[in-house]
Length: 203
Image 1 (cartoon, rainbow, N blue to C red):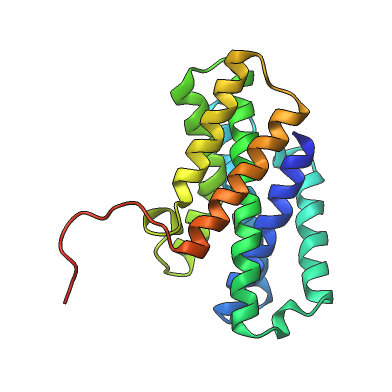
Image 2 (image 1 turned 45 degrees about the vertical axis):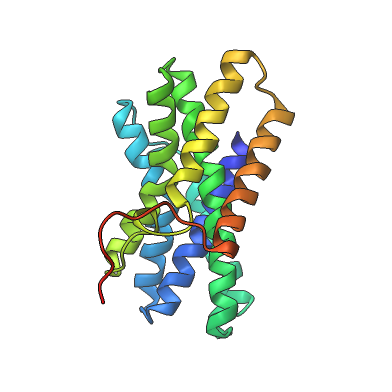
């Protein structure tokens, strides 16, 4: 799970960095978005289970964020065309979504929560940082309208809870959930699959 946490942190740091570039923020603004996106969901999760967020006493996630942002700058991601940035954003955001769904659900299992608790923690860990990021730049969060976004987090976290009940949690099952979740997210984006909307469309 440490690897999934590192993957999620780095991926969401990249997505925050790319949003900051797209919104033409200054250096501090870009750093704030990267940090909030990468650790925001984890902080919300830890507050819910009444524990001090890990980032307050362990520098690992902050080091991952700093290294990721520096590497993104070194690779010149800020000079890429908007279409390339959009594709990279989707991939990075998808990686973070699935990885954090698993790490959040794992915390729920550690606290011996029921299915709702495990799924809720996986969901909050996965989408919390992205929601704060989007609200900070005045965008409608992905979770509310696009690409099966929140649904993927629920499916992955629910899958981990089910595997735990069946005694199947291990390296292979975590890998299976990760790649299935990532494939579902990318397929939903590529095919523009969304949940049904209620109400009439505006003319």
